[in-house]
Structure formats: structure tokens, C-alpha cells
Image (cartoon, rainbow, N blue to C red; front, side, top):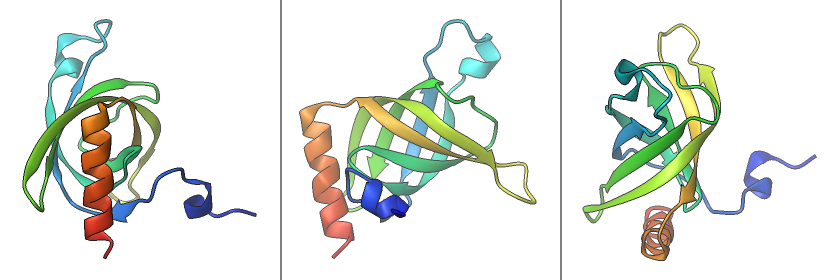
Length: 119
């Protein structure tokens, strides 16, 4: 049986970076389309994992503003929630977000960041 790391297409690293997530689904009520500030728990060129203060359904589309910590850089992408679960004993949720619209420059920047952090 394969573990999660052997099935991944991109190297992933534990990394806390500041993000702004904004749902981009017009069918949601305005209160559910508000931007929220979160911190990533891991990141790769293919996506990231975050802790959320509120539930976001699988397949939610999000505009993602990423502020990488070292060296400081900012970028934006669009992604989709692939999985979500409640963090036991809390009112928080953890979610995996896959990038589905990321520029080649962003992908390069993320690969370089992951390589630097994993050294």
C-alpha cells in the first residue's frame, strides 16, 4: 500500500505562511463569500493544507493570496477544496486545497520555496 507521500506529484513541506482565501462562488450568500485570513500548515507546488475558522464544502472554489515567509514574496492562485475535516476537540476545520489555476511563475516560485525550506 502506498503512503500519501509516494502518491503525491509534488514535494510537500510543513510551512506556516499567511494566506487570504476568498470564495469565488456567486451562488453563495454574501456572508459566505467574505475573505478570511488563515495560516498554511503545509505547502507544495500543487496545493496546500490550511486550518479554517469555518466550514468550507468540498469543491469550493477559492481565490488564494499567498505570502511566503522566506524570502518574503506574494502570489495569487485559484484553487479548489479537495477535502475537509473538523479538527477534533475544536471548532476549527482542516482542508486540503489544490491549485487549479496557477501561473508558471507561481509554480516555479513554489517549487523553489519548497526546495529551499526542505534543505
